[in-house]
Length: 394
Image (cartoon, rainbow, N blue to C red; front, side, top):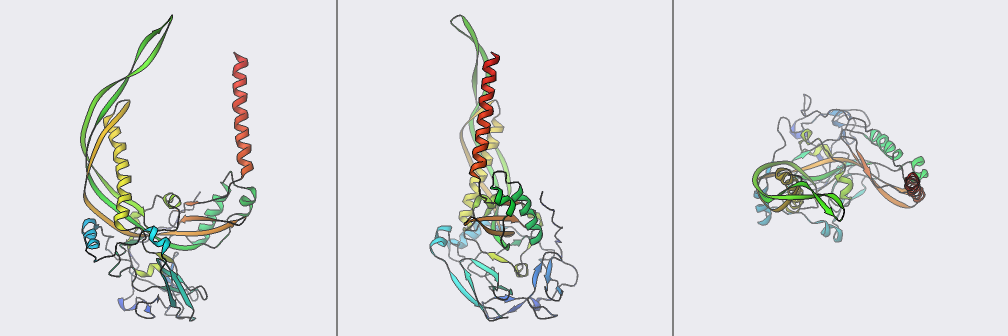
């Protein structure tokens, strides 16, 4: 069972820092670090205190995560018009990123090492000295859609690892060696990009409602009861509001793994500030705002279809057509926290993700051919035994 995370403070403690202490930029457009006032080391976002903290001397530097300002909804149609006019880049598709990787190098301000940022990676730590660095201004650059909110990390590495160990032990068809050894590797904290969409839909439908009834039919000297269906026309219209339809906007991770990390407590998101990224990786979006909305509409239409079936009623339904108008369209660009781990078993790589707020674990795992085969043989034997018993009893 996943351990429960601590509550995330929505409002910062008193005594927040002034705006002139937001971090030291190494060079314009280059990585930003957050120096400790006590010892000069780089600060990182602390899960325990939900603020910036020094891992060497323990100094805590509070910052204002948006204050009383709520995470604001943005006008979807207006932003799409800006994209069409070239005022905002739409974001590259996953197919584009697969064939073209943007590689940038920045120099660590502490040890002087060159740190490489590949593709849409926007923050990382120096692999040589561990200093948290960040590409200055990526999230609020004029040619990218700004981040509106962030859900801060609430579970630390140790909790994520314990949840992973419990997850491994419940993989019934995994090889015994894997269950015994576990998934070993280094967890990397990363913020993944998501779009959320709100929409007020007006829906009109036509179809038929089927109601079953039974008749007695004679066949030779015997009679039997046969189920038949009467069909009645059905139509109607209704409104339904969809709130925060969540779409993963990144690449390089299996969608089915990320989708199973739901639900996210999105009501605990706070307004974005760069301090949340200190010490963690973050990726900008690879799926454009428009493509993300196309994915959201597919989910919305599927939910509307389920509701139409319910509204038609009866025993069975036929849907002839559904017309949907979308209005009051808004979106948010969010960063949500995940612990990622890639481990190897018998030379094969497997990815695991842990929701860094709820503790939910999802990922790939090896399968035991022999366990599956024995289970299939056991089930087949039980079925065959049941058939023989029934034949003997007759």
